[in-house]
Length: 392
Image: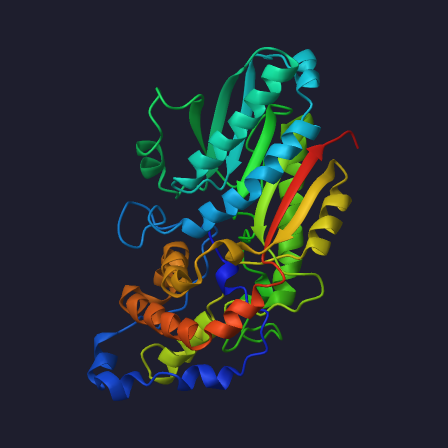
């Protein structure tokens, strides 16, 4: 479920009233557009799985995952160094029942191609370490995991041919918040832009009479923080059982600097409010819509990892993803990437007829507030964590 949200994780003090005044669709195209966008008024509960757009179409994840690829490239040298310094391959060789096979899992793999690049990078680094320390190279088994609703057909149809890949491949459908593998069966686990997806919406957000009812916005960070903490505790507990002592867990995720208040997805939320004010959708639909995403700070992650007690943090870095991306492409590309990640959730709640319009509005807002968007990224919006499994 590798999705890019850093480009819209804003740490901005924005006047929300300005968002709705930037575009007047009725003046531009006439009242007839309102009749053409008939959206169901029924409210729905968020699903517990959030697959990226499958296939190979214009708005597919396959064609709109450049930001995630950049994130992987930024993290590569850090992961390579950690493998050299901390991966205990001698302990694996002496204790593993099947010491000729090195097992890797990519959790939240989505539909490629980034998962294949990540796995190849890890394999090359591990191979070099085995060759230098043991004089031999093991077989590699890779498990590609995502929710059962993920487009595994697209994933495996784009798998590199056997002549070009150095591993055996298998799909493992299921939620990574629970157990997926036998005890001590994995040497290395990787997850990029996946664990920031909540397993479910906090219950108080679904109650219109609750103080947490999210009127006019699409996220509620206090409730999300509590749910993220529960999810991450489950995630780490499961991985502690599955990863061998001496093995590694790498997490790449959207983040915010410590002590910076959350202000995620303000532009997208204001785009929905624009449509509601023009009666293309109802305000009740916007009020009941919540994106199940949370960007944790390094401090929050450190506390959660320490509470688990089975992992040591060997590397942690908050970096600026956008420093490696051409600023001239970010407006349109961000909108396309966000659509590839969120279209399924939005269509389920609002219907398909509204989808083009809401992302058109979002694109125009990214242009209007481009300077503030760029300034918000300077402190870093991507967290890379390298953890080592230890005895508690």
